Every structure is written in structure tokens, then in C-alpha cells.
Amino acid sequence: MKGAALGQLHSIRGRACRLRSRTAFLAFMQKRIIIYVAAILLVLRSGYAYQQPRDSRAILTETPAPSDARIAYGKDPNQFGELRLPHGTAFKKPYPVVVMLHGGCWMAEYGLGYMGHVGADLAAQGIATWNLEYRRVGNPGGGIVGTFHDVQLGVRHLETLAKNYSLDLQRIVVIGHSAGGHLALRLADTLFDKAAPKGALRWRGVVALAAITDLRRTGTACDASVQMLMGGTAREQGALYAQHSPLELLPLGAIKQIIVHGDADRIVPTVMATSYVEAAQKKGDDAKLMLIEKAGHFEIVDAQAIAWAQVRAEILKLVE
Image (cartoon, rainbow, N blue to C red; front, side, top):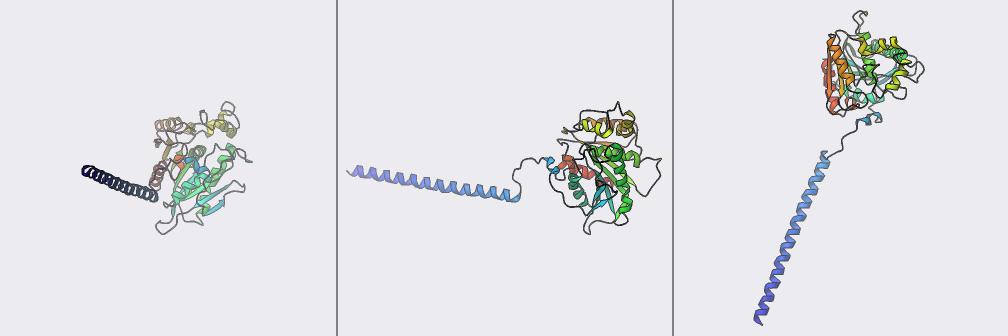
């Protein structure tokens, strides 16, 4: 009888010990869970949580910071530009200027809006930006003659703008994206022509971003638009193609050319950049190729993308 009672007592003590151990273990785990949850919340609050990679096509629908002024350079509704200026006392006046030409296969349905993002970013770096709109295919007067006339007119309007805004016309860079890159290079052939009369404007360089450099080469998302822009095929409008295709206008001369392309671009193939730079260098032009790894068509004009930071660094060097 005494032995049975003693055994029962030991059993009760064992269960009590196990219960205390289990309770202690649960309390320990509860504390660990609280610590883990707090750590996750801290990471989220600090902004370092994992995020899906940004799709840079978002710039097409996102609204950029407003410009300082929207100014007409001609009478047509599409002959205007958006001027953005640096703000604050950190930047020395007069400001260097970047002229910006948007893409969109030269088609009327695509406008200058998305370039406003990098325009605002450059203004924050002390550079004035002049983001040009122009007549495009589908607009009255659009097509290569009217379109190119507009970008020439818009650029020359800088002389008028400088009368009212603090712009340094001795430090100007032209940048263009996609179809706008074509226009920037075409513009360079005119503005930087040594035979052209010297004006008050001094051009530091041209930056062509995912540019269509050869109007005769197919394989871009803009193939059909090229024919609409030019009013026919290369066979039908051979002389016009020769007059406006950047590859056929080489050499451009002393002007510095920076040709930027993402190696993952599926809209304009990288051969547009590589073949152009190879031809330019063979003819003695100062042309630099920048192939940006893992960048697509829009990353190089997305102010939030690493690819744009590389482009911006090159622009800053040009205006120094």
C-alpha cells in the first residue's frame, strides 16, 4: 500500500515536471514569434521589404512632376515644349540645357508626357530641360518633313527662351528616345554641321537612347510607322531615306555622340546601336556605345531605374 502511494506520487511529480517544461517551451516559442514579427514589421517600416521588380513601362501612364512652363514655339497646337528649371540656391545660374525628344514611332497617339519624369530628374540636378512636342504621323502636317521642321524650330526657340529664363546657351545637349533618338541624331547632322552659320547656341553632344538609327533596317516595333513617316518604302522614297536616316548621314564631325541601348530591348534591337557606333567610329566620329545590362526599352528613360542613373551621369559630364 505504501509502495503504491509512493509510485503515484512520483507519477504526479513527473506529470507536473512535464507540464512545467511544456509551459516553459510554449512561453519560449511565444517570445521568439513576437521577436520575429517585430523584426518583420521593422523591415517593412524601414522600406527594405522585398518588392517585385518595377516595370518601367509604368512611366507611360504615371504623371510626372508638372513643368514650370508650357510654351508654344509655333502656331500649331503640337508645336510647344515643357520647360523645367532647377529650383533652390544650390545651382548656379545660368543653367545648362537638355533638349528632349520623345519616342512613340513618330505616331500621333504617343506624346511627350513620359519624358517628363527624367526631365524633372535632370532639373533636380541643376539642368534646365526643354521637352519638345512636335507634329507626328496622324497630325495635320505630320510626317518626316513637318516633324523634322518642328524639332528644328523648337530647338532654335531656345534663343527666345533665354531672354526670359536663365539658360546657358553655351552648354546644350540633345537627347532623344526611340523614334526621338532618330530625330536627335538627324538634328545633330544639321545643328553640328561645320558649314552651317555659327549662332548663339553651342552644342555639347547628342545622347541617343534606344534610337532607330537606320530607317532602312527592319525588325523594330516601328517598321510600319517608318513607311508612314517617310511616305513610302525605302525603294519608293530612296532619296528621302538617304536624307533622313542617321546611319547614312555619317560622319557628323566633331560633335560627341553617346549611343545608349539596353541589351534586353525587344522594341528596338541592339544592332541599331552597335552597327551605328561601329560605322561612326570608322568614319572618325566621336561616338561612344553604352550597352546597359538587363535594361529594356524604357528602363533607360525611367527616372527610378538604375539604367537611367548611368545615362544621367553621362549627361552631367557633357554639360560640365
